[in-house]
Image 1 (cartoon, rainbow, N blue to C red):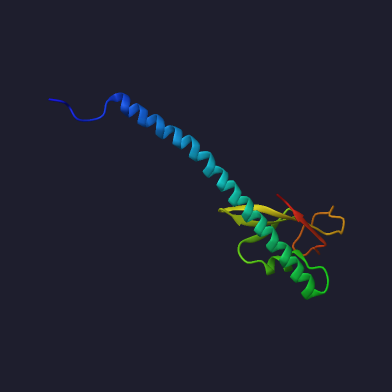
Image 2 (tube, helix red, strand yellow):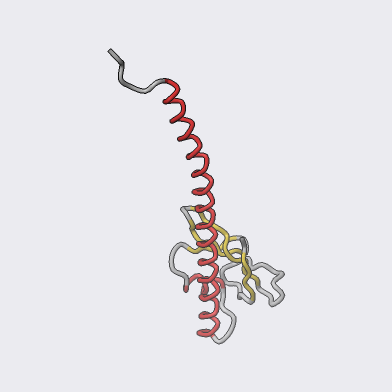
Length: 121
């Protein structure tokens, strides 16, 4: 009578093949995750630039940090001269906020007038 089932070698080959497939798939998923995070940062930066432009148009002058934050939807905050947005559950620096036209002096309070915005990532 012949026993039915897989031999140890057949099982080992299947495990090796699965290991190879996992080794190929994991880096691709990791890369997709980092691409998605970068796309979210770019989109958030675009929203901040739009909020800044709208605030300038409505005020007919430079807005404060608080006025820009008021135009943003979602979890936006200000800390250390940077506007932060929550991406993937983590507060992420998106935009540097400056009080001068040459983009050298970071704003230090929400009441500061914003004259320049740059990417913080």
